[in-house]
Image (cartoon, rainbow, N blue to C red; front, side):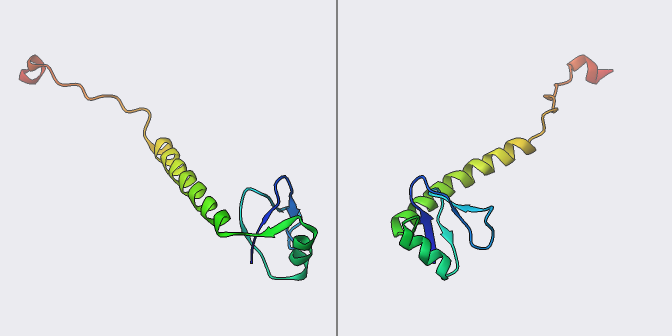
Length: 92
């Protein structure tokens, strides 16, 4: 099932309590008692179509920004512009 935390809440993952479900990202979790209890407590809620759509649009912007950053990092920085030879240099 897909869940997201309520605004301002961080919920530890059942399998790794050092990782958290936040209100920033929809997370796929196991359909087990732990998450059902957190939903009943009001800390988590099932993700809606609006949550998924918002995440897709945010992810697309992030992916484009990451791609631009990767291209910028891989561009050579020590390239010098080509110099046209003088007519006199070519004749010597």
